[in-house]
Amino acid sequence: MKYVIIGNSYAGLSCADAIRRFDKSGEVVIISDENYRAYARPLISYYLEGKTTDETIWYKEDDYYEKNNFDLMLGKKVVSVDTNAKRVVLEDGAAVNYDKLFVGPGGTPFIPPTEGFNPDSPMMGTFTRFDDAKKMEKAAKMSKRKEAIVVGGGLIGLKASEGLRALGLHTTIVELLPRVLGLALDEVSGNITSKKLNENGIDTATGETVVKINLDESGNPVSVLLKSGKELPADIVVVGVGVRPNVGFLEGSGVKIDRGIIVDKTMMTSVKDVYAGGDATVIYDVINKRPNIIAIVPLACEEGRVAGTNMAGVYREYPGGMGLNSVEIYGLPIVTIGLTNPSNETQNVYVFQDDKIYRKLVYDGEVLVGAILLGDISGSGILSAIIRQGLKCLKYKDEFLNGNIYSFVIDNEFEIYNINEGYAIRGDFEDLPEFSRTNWR
Amino acid sequence: MSKKLTNLEEDLKKNQIEIMLYPSKCDGCESEGFAACVKACESHMAQKYGSKYAGARINIKKKENKFFPLICHNCDEAPCADACMPGARYKDLESGWTVTNYKKCVGCWMCVMSCPFGAIERIGKGHFASKCDGCSDEDTPKCVEACKKGALKRIGIKNYSYERRLSVAKKIYGPYIKSISK
Image (cartoon, rainbow over all chains, first blue to last red; front, top):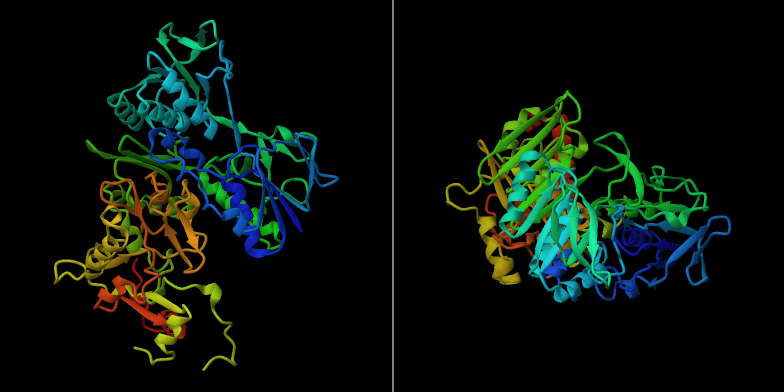
């Protein structure tokens, strides 16, 4: 059996691990268009800040591929997939045959039409890959006036600006929505976050867009013109608006695509023996109760694992996931889980706020469907579990708001957490001898 | 206490030892003023990982008169390992535990957000998330060694199986149900 995996990041490697768990001898080929072994992609901003280095940014240990017997093909871009002949065609014309294929291409940065944007300039670019971070590191050194503009106030934009700020640049975030992290946060928490950014030398221009980037004769930015008519100086322009599923190479393969790759419960696409996972895949959103693209690391790993298990011939279903994210902005931890801005009248919002902490719970009837935690995030995992399972917990709302989230575990240890008296924690059940009458004394 | 079904020393060699949790026996060591397991874990972690990554991996939470030791449950396919962006948390195939490479940890708090038991916490003011490693290189985990109340015990796999069946039967059949809180 020959498995081919397109994409050498969270979903792809999680899939490879799952295959190896059930199929010790099958040939596994991992194809990546980058020239690095797997690295922690969301950490490229930490790389600019110096919190991760060239030694620690790698996602797996050094001998990961050899130890698991994975063939790694780096710097090979897949241009098309021939699902009839079961073949993956690479840019250099070579072809790789497969028995089972996993597609985890992730996303490509979306660049809104902006006059003057020139990705070939060393001072302009997007911010999703290791090469982008290295480019920005060089650009910061070349920058004379130390002025940077980041287009987009989402997670990519925020993290890019934090990285540029750490390199000594005065940074301005230009965001279309009225607040930073506009899709995840509400007004109050957005303002707290903006304030934290402003205190640390990052300006926020919300409700604004860049209409034009003024260039000098060599094609590098000089200033940007905003919708309001304001002109801001700019040595560096980073566009971090968002990503779109990178599915161009699947054209003509017969794989059904509607915004992202459509998969069934076993993570198989509309074509037999082709599986998908990660940021380019449409999965079931358990909170909004509809198919959705949720581009986060935990779900990419889960999807990859379910796909890999099925590819290795062990049936397994994926129940769907929900959006949740965690980020720290200059010492302010932020966790957003599920639905954070209520969408209809049956949903109620409960808020707790003091000078350091903000907590918001969104209930749909008795069921908790979303939460925002700012400042104090301990126990937020318990909330994630409650929200994902859709448990009724309206009677705990005051305790949750006061930060006493643990009381839910204590009360529900028997039913939900299945912790009985005599609950075993340590021990490797895989290695247990088979219990049978003959070896039972 | 059940009768001895297996030899603890023998099970230890085969890695067939469990940490057992008996929440109802935990009294938070209130009379002593500090929880013995928390203190033992804290000093052991400081010794093992250095003061930078010290901090107890076990926590006693109280509600009214009920105590509960919050400890890593060593999930298989652990949510904290899935959520870990830098790849600092991984399954150690030899010991069967999900462990942490603190050099890679950057403090993104994805694991804090993902742990359904609330067992992962920030270490002091640093940018590291603490996680129990099961003391897999020790014979007996330090928290278990320190617990004199019988809330944490170590036990061989056959004894575990026996006690488990005993308690499940009692829960379903016997007058045991009162401990289920509503």
